[in-house]
Length: 352
Image (cartoon, rainbow, N blue to C red; front, side, top):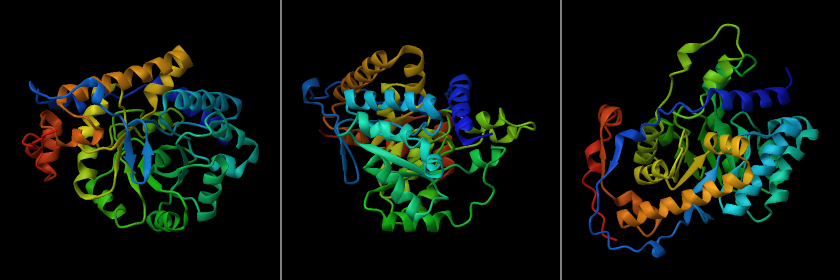
């Protein structure tokens, strides 16, 4: 099977497999504020990922490219969505275009359609420094995502089986590149141990890519004769992974992994994220409803985030990390047994 065909299969399986809806956000509740001392018109959606300034806390996370005209059309629509709504956009892995120059246009369309937007390049941790430089130059990227996908590769019939030296390569790439490097998981979550290790490198941010969204184990298992079903329920739920990574890294934390609506976005920001990536929900809306409806959907998300911020007395997105939360159920248990003191979230004090 060609790499391009595999890219197209990933999109189709992602649409049919759907979201797992096991992110842990159902175990996060806000403490109601009867006197928020806030006005809706004063709320601001701007966010920062290290040195990058974004007009929205939402970005479209890495999905596709390198699958010929099919993925080029999707990236074209995602880039127009990004341009019209002011949200950032990450492309899918560019390794296919580095190996087959005819696929470059499926990525270059993103910068062509959105010349002034915030765009992230993307490669796996197997990439060399030169490949990272080439990926950034290909789309004039503002940052590079380096993705970690051990479980996907192990489940993929033709996937990698050797993951030695990944940390050293990431560190070298971050040292050599002229743009920030973001390390992201692809649906299985970042632990506090991994976050602490990554914080010792020159990277600029961590995207937790938690369990609960598109499940690449299930996608790759659809392509296997003998399924590795034990990986289908593997991973750290997104809500828990945000708390784990934020507790130790000291780096900006990006939240992604099955986030579907404005309430989950605000919960992710309150747990410690500075920005929130959406992929599966955006892709499904684009495919099922079209570009104009998806633009409207993102604009509605922005409006609803501002309503929620106003209700909580928060003028800036970073203020959400100070509001009290009640954590219950499996999330409370996870954080407790991991030594992360879930009750500390309940006793936070916020004075706007």
